Amino acid sequence: MILKKISLKNFRNYSAQELRFNDKFNFIYGNNGHGKTNILEAVSYTTFGKSFLGSSESDCIKFLENEFFIDSEFENDLGNKDHIVINYNSETKSKSIHRNKEKVMSFSSEIFGRFPMVFLSPKSLVITYGNPSDRRRFFDILISQASRLYLDHLKELAKILRQKNVLLKDYTMFRKYSYAEMKNLLASYNEKLAEVSAHIVFKRLNFLKEFKNYFEKNFSFLQKNNHHASISYFSDYLNDNDAHGFDSINEILLKYITDKTEEEIGRSISLAGPQRDDYIFRLRKEGEEEFELKNFASQGEHKTFLIGLKLSEYDYLKDKKSTSPILLLDDVLSELDESRVSKIISHLKDYGQIFLTTTDAGYITNLKEFYRDDEISSFQIEKGNLV
Image 1 (spheres, rainbow, N blue to C red):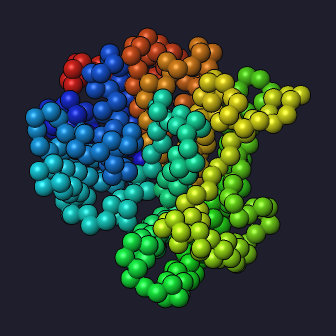
Image 2 (image 1 turned 120 degrees about the vertical axis):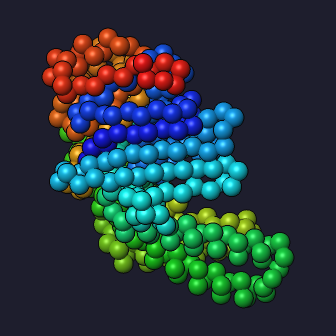
């Protein structure tokens, strides 16, 4: 999949700008705060429907304006083109999306996953440093790009949890039901919740079995020392993840959720399900005991682990979608030592279309060791303009 061009109007610090991209490497450089990352953010809107930095739509409108437009054109491996236009208006608080001039009613159903994308920025370190929700979000987005069914199950889970939490609060605050009625209503919700949750957990466990192979290969490529890295799935209700099929997970979850009923009524919130699970990242150095990355790893070990995750995400999506994802690298080389920079740049030649932002124009010299001149397009950004 290739992004051929993008036009921005009143997006971040861009009044009006069109950029035509190289099919291979797009080198975007300039001083901090001038708009390099904003280009990648606009690209993420066309593939995810939202900012890869987590910014709200209103934050992305140029100062003193009331709406932005992003107009992009993709081309698949067969040469077929897709034209995506996104408009957000702050006055009406509405976002409209058109694909090939037809209004998109559901971004998740009609566009999400169609243009696979992998991004890496300094803020991505929240995956290894952050909360369980940050790790779940990373893996949920990854799995959802490859599996529409998984995305549907996530949406169904969110819907059931919203309804169940409203039920719990209505009982606590307004006593709309008797205690017996409340227990019966919860039992009905819990049965649906357990089934949908079992689908999600079953998919996560099977995904992880596959993903481990990609990750071990990429982590081994990146690290200089004889370190071993691992990823495992953690929940309060499963002890041996490999020993359970769907029916077993469903049964265990239903019992666990049911056992939480009294506590949930007392606290007026759902306390059980895959929305509270975690992925555990571990490292083991040669001759030492294994330790959890989040609590004991150095900053360099976090960065290496994260890059291994992202390269593995790329490889996984490429195999599952049978097309090369777009790779966005936002100011990541400056965070690494020179030997690792050279190693990563040499590895990038094996990837599809790449967008890299940096403050150091000198990195293009490294790139030209592996790319021909016609395979690199260079963009200098200054104060929201392409110089």
